[in-house]
Image (tube, rainbow, N blue to C red; front, side):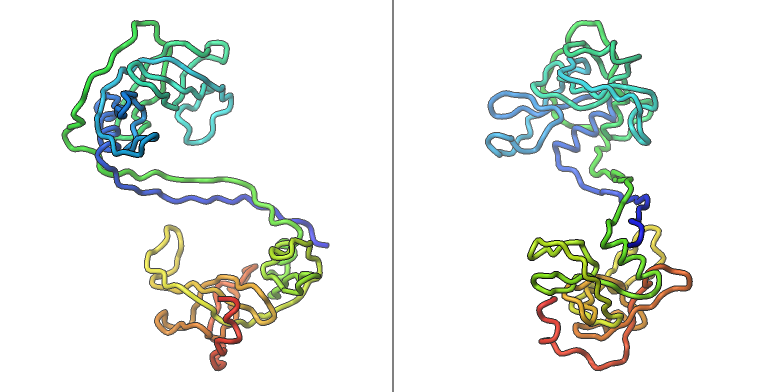
Length: 313
């Protein structure tokens, strides 16, 4: 049995969203060193603000300016900050109920050690030197010994309001595909496609999962399939992905390999994007030195009859 593989994997993309009037006022306020909450129908002030009452689901826009001082309601010490976290020295994650608010805001507290942090301690906002209209405009919280602040109504009007944000999302982890998919990847490296057959329903799954998703029993009988297959359905991609050297438009398709009972997805090449169709017969193309197919191209065979692949659409 081949060794189980593992490799570092990074999933990263920019998350872009537009802002409604409440979130726009909140983030623009942070840029201007002002913290805004929103008042619900029962008089509670929520910070951070939301656009709809969590109890009644009614739209709420009654903005309230709260103090930049508050009280720690709970905390957890972080001895090893990770990349992109607010501080590069050990800090405390804290929930802070700002003076004038009825809910707590999650942020970080700059403190010399866990012995300096406690529930109930007083803190205040430390503003970032450069502010752009994001929650990171609050650089962190810091201990504070002064008097509590108050709250006041606010119209939410600012010059040049923030109307949208782009937040980078990133997930770093080590992926281990397990026994079944390790064998599948090893076979691909030798330009073979191997699936596994369920001992109960006899379906062949590619890529293999180590267990039948229908019957719930383990699979260990390996079956070589393909390498040719049939396009069952597809989509045309018109937006170019960052760091992906493929010109748009291009086609990604579900491909039912000959002998498999589960369609896999792959890019279609060697044919104009507007000529790809359901039933198109395709075969894999390996790039020099690659461990997996770069794309699939037409074989030149007649299209498969719909009845031959309709169960896999």
